[in-house]
Length: 156
View 1 (tube, one colour):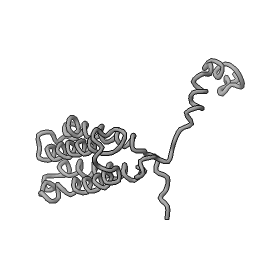
View 2 (tube, rainbow, N blue to C red):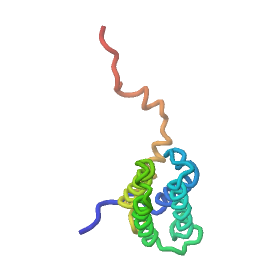
View 3 (cartoon, helix red, strand yellow):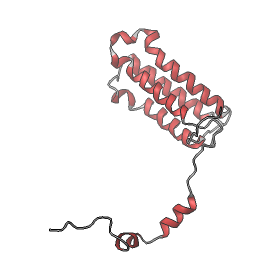
């Protein structure tokens, strides 16, 4: 059975990888209200590992191109499950939802990202670049002032 269309190509997946890695390393623990906790350290380490193997991935934004893209996606899946399990394995969940909910939320984000990423790296959606170029060359005033009005004045 064929997979449904997956719009995210390897380049966009790379953008998300690096953005997520940088966010997890810097501001996420503070935004999640876990700054200074064991959970924050775990999330920062996960972000560093993710950014590290992203730099080694063979995709357009990879620096070294040593890890095949499908292997990278498998590492993403394993990492997401490991991140979600961490607070339950270490017992941090006993300290309240703030100590496990960020882990689970990040894992769900990662798994959702994987669900819409094309494992071939090509993606199934590509915009019509020529149509965008033609549209950008048109006079915007023509669309505003010519033709039927989209909104008509109310009759008093």
